[in-house]
Length: 388
Image (tube, rainbow, N blue to C red; front, top):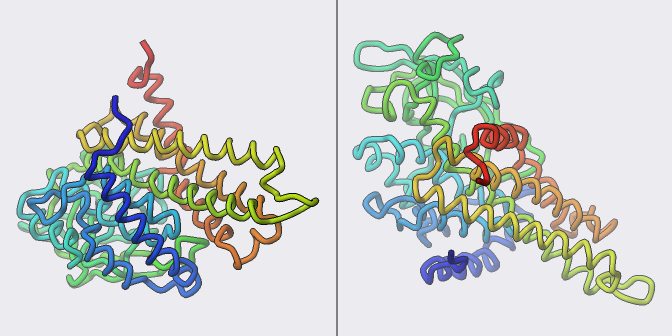
């Protein structure tokens, strides 16, 4: 069992760390306050090859896999979770296409994402169907060789920036709970009937728009069906394989928050010594550092598993543990780090209130903490996660 990164991944980590320190950190506060999409950072990421990390070389990527993307996102998230989200969106919508799509679909849609020539977004949630995936009402009806899609997707990250969308719709009855009644489609932004509806006003992770995708009798050719008709399992495989990538946003945020707080308490004096001299603060730092490292180990293991194709049902508990624990640690660490600064931490003079707001999103997106706990528990009950 080797816990060291390969030379290639270690070099990637060092490269992205330097880029994040020099280019991302100075932009983090401005991105949050203006809520403007950081096109300059996207161009920087594309130029550095980061938009193609998890995409195979045959489709224009570097083939660094989910592990490579996880490492890059961890470094970027130390300073900006909005910038880290841009990297996450190179995998979330392309994942189903890479898992079950045709070579032509990968060449036409995934390859431009790898090179930074196109962006994509992922449409699963709906106003009445968040965690309850089978509750989606977006309808796909067959019309000759095509499919016609109607409905509204919501809480879609990158909705205004995307050139195309992975959209899940009911190909069976709208009220069906059968897994074979859901299918996946590639929908292009430029097609008639495709529009962006409401754009959300968010507590955190500002700068990358989240909002509604409205589909009004959108005609989708048969060649844009991803995999087979009946794609609920594909939705789950896509989300399962994303767990370490979301977790990476959590561990990066936690690392960034704790590092900032530690440097502050080493300088801030109170009661004739620095805050860092107090045993209570030292113990809290030790506790948080341990939890961050535990989260990293869970996350790196999950990334290795996902790269090995181990994201089917029996592997779900291990992937869900990474997402659950890392994102909850992000919430805890950001809160404790803010507290270490006292009143100063509550002010925008310091980044901790930004970390604090950004962290909560991570426990909700792509499967809430409660959903992850349910999946872990089911794994134990079914002996997918067992110890003898």
